[in-house]
Length: 326
Image (cartoon, rainbow, N blue to C red):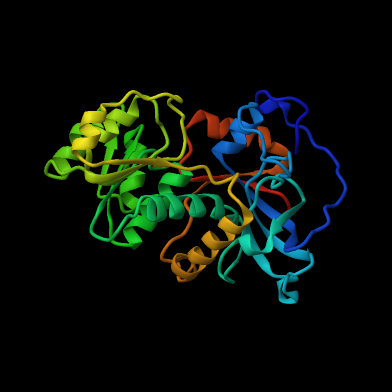
């Protein structure tokens, strides 16, 4: 499913393209399901072009079966059930992926669940644990606790013995976050999250903040970020610009950082996948963590899937079914 020009969800239309051929260290995946993510929406709107060499078709994560391999790929990859982080091309019947960006899907895991994992898992692992240096016993504040990123962050943080605070826009969503393990869920529409975080932590503040809002949230975040705390930005839904009090930042020795995953090199993503496979993937294999699923749409109804994401009522992941499960 592609589009000719950026616009609303209605711009999607089906298209037929040549079957991709895997290059060196690539695999061709017969796609079962594809995850829908906020960057897909932003790309469709015309504000997030794919990086050089990436498919113009949206879709950053897929599950499916490897049906062809390129030079340098181990033969045992053929016919393996995998989920993969991709730079584009997921909204299609076949998708190329770097072999080192694939994770073997456990036998017990449905392919719809598998497709809901890679983008959020890679993003959360890198930004919370690598950029944010989160450690057991610390406190994490994650905004948007019932988004795909938020639900993944809550579960991963709790699995590694962090205290988790989250924000959400309704009591229903706050309750869902608590059920996932959040120690404190704050309705940002009716409560001041800065006050609540500081009260909950006895004035210390959160050690790590995972922020998807930016804009005027940044100073508010810093006001409830601990001494030597780390503020990690992964999206700018609230605006590109932020005004902050640098004197306060210096006095509390706070760190401001952030990242985008899609344009990073294949080598970086391979190293990230290897670390995830060693330290986080076992939690999915033993079912300690499972993706929180919202709704599944047929690929032909991708416009409706995007409308659901833009509406903001979803809890967890939205997934496209590319081919019915066998």
